[in-house]
Length: 453
Image 1 (cartoon, rainbow, N blue to C red):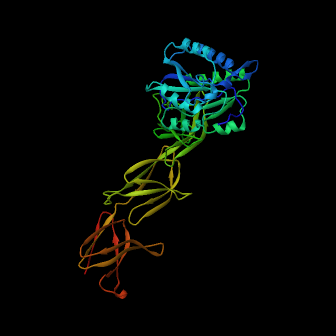
Image 2: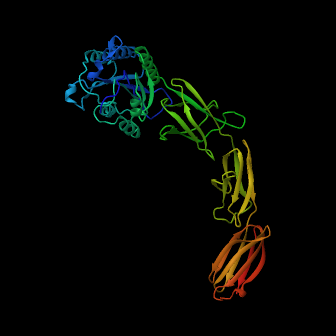
Image 3: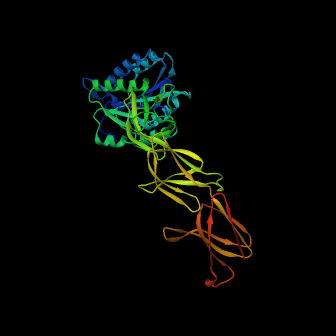
């Protein structure tokens, strides 16, 4: 790949997927560009001189930082540019405690030579981290140009993210062209530094984000604006890619306050709170190294479905429906209580016949109860095969409740109390005029008997 306009530095910050309730150990791998183009001028110095100075100063400042280990990988420094060695990358100083001087010595002795191989270096860098659970693994790549070995840094980044090795990077550079931005849009978030001073400041910010936790609390607000709602799962998704970052069950701590979460600040989050119906907060951006408070309206109340006496239904349920969209939000069992977002709902009771409540109000911290009469039963005994329909007269119209095609046997149908009509014809008689009707009433807890001859 031909190089575009050179840049001073690109920083790619990758943070491991897991988050922890306590400050975890952090490992930072510096990946330094040792290609020949690093000799190009920057101000009164060349790029490699400035890079050495800033990186050495940073490594020295981190010498006494607790719970932090460093390592150094360099690429493009072992073969001449004319050789175009696209595997010229090496872990020069592996992770260990107290290796700061070794890193500084290696930086001091570095002499740029070859080509720029970002994708392969990132791929190999993933193996530089010891496989230790509960550690935040971070890569900071310092380079002066784009990929020259036909690799795809975006594809490598996405693959590593899917494997849970690293997360979305920060990209920071000087003199970024439009072409460069297009190349790296899929890799991460861009920051531009125009001077050595700017770059030093950005490097400090990135390191601060790497070694300091970014915390947050999600306030699930009730109808009075208090953060009292809890015990519901929240899905955190990358706003840009739609990839799920984490699922966290909301809880209140022992003080009755929303518990503290540790989140990666490199993402803008879409948060889905799995209430019924779900509520959302889009494009939530965190201030790195700070405690962030995220408020989401999630006022809830309870809906209780109750049936008198013995249900007689094998599994009586109700459809909870959005009154505006007619979307079915939930299928709730009877003799069960469920929480819903405060609102008015339509409830269709799957009794026989079905019953609909057009407006059921769910209110903050209250229990709304829908109570249904105990059903009765219709017992039909036949000696031959019959075509049978159970009907009711509702709002001046005859409505089918249930169709039966019965052989010589007994059928028991559970029905809600009310007035009905039985319309039937013997199957073997092919004359419509043989149709018969019979009015009947179903009473709660009682059985109505019919014998058809």
